Image (cartoon, rainbow, N blue to C red; front, side, top):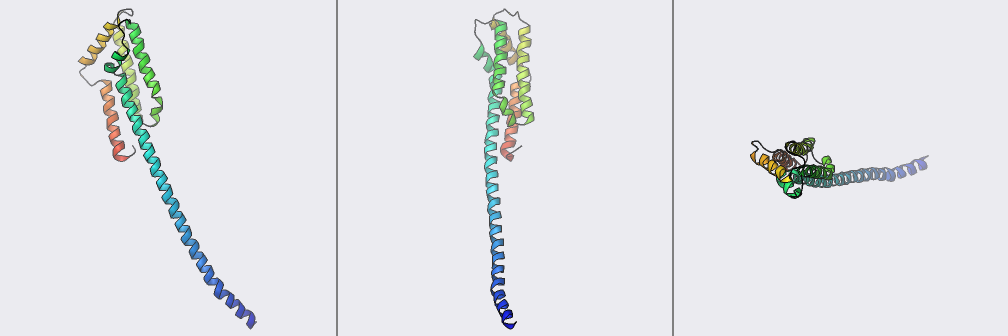
Length: 183
């Protein structure tokens, strides 16, 4: 038994320190791997945030462009043709506004609900304004009359136009997004 005990003690003298070194190494490697994984996740998260911010800013740019393009000052000269009638110009205005809107529908996932609702309201107000003014004229009258009435209406407006209100809302939100990264 003495020989067996001595052999057992010799084995324990070598295995216990080896086991302790194995546990310590395992803990250090595990801690290192967890730290590396967290760093990678943080890096991926930051990259995703940068991409998302770029996409959001592009969406806001598209919303500004949309609002500007459907404003009467830009839209009327683009679609007006002297050979048109009031009804044809009214239809062309509505068609162009709806076409621009449909082209930008996907941008709603990148902008806030407030901005999207504002953009939708501008679209509706511009169509409504064109329809109301056109309703005062004979459908077969020259489009020049509708053109003149819409431009007079826009130039004589006392309050901000829907386009100006929307641009203010969009600009304010972009400032928040730029300052805080996400809003």
